[in-house]
Figure 1 (cartoon, rainbow, N blue to C red):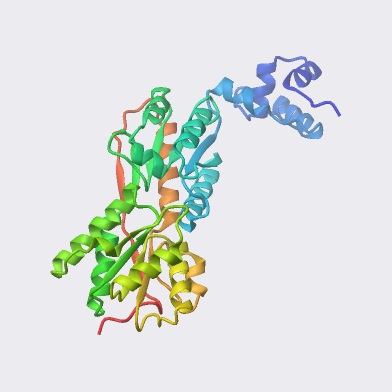
Figure 2: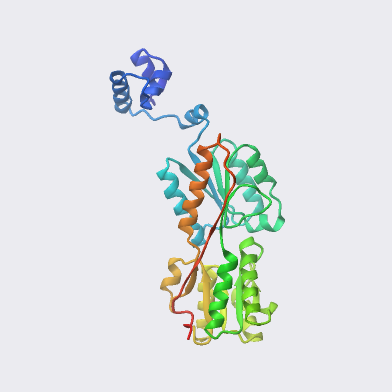
Length: 340
């Protein structure tokens, strides 16, 4: 069945294509009688607007690009949900992409989205991008007069709107909490040590140790690369040091640590307490349930989407860039001792 076009409808009513377009878009410039007839005819013949043509005409795609480093991370899943919910409510669709922590993949994805596909971009930098410190692809995106919001993984080298988590404070408060429960040898297990958030969490951890006059021990800072054997590295950690608490900087690592400790018949939290970042569903249902730091991903997504859409819809008005700081919450469960 041939797809009906604006030209076909215009021919049917003996009017211009512009008149048909205005009638379908409910313009006040067209009489109610003609508008009703054109809309009824378009509906009867299943007319669908050509979105590419409309975007070229209106210089708007009504699409927002979103790039995250790791779609398997529950935090980013929650951010996606918040972005999509807010964008849809404001009449926008999202194009979701993942960089998989790769600089090259991030560069290619940003280039693809900058070629007239989206009206703006919400981006969390890959660990490799932050490690390289090369942001030319992002600067080029901004030079194309496209709005950008960076969230979670950000850089001071790019001027744009940002939404960040108070990672320093989150780690500081978590370490303090563990020390107050009686823990003295607190280890950190990190898969994101090259990212800005990973570094901030280590700084918060160090500050809490210093406040309690506990020396920082490099051997308690366990850095896990993608191909590393967590069980082996954890066994080495436990063999070399008396560890009584472990902070895992993401949810999956926290669950893996719990599994490994249980396999070694180590009692949690009686012998070793565990805290993880990102309050996902998995952490609630393992046994014992895991104490987690909630980063409020859904709220971060909503905030990022609103910042971007406000920027898209107010291009002509000067709006100073803003950085929104989101506080975290410690969700106490069974994997840590209570403060006595």
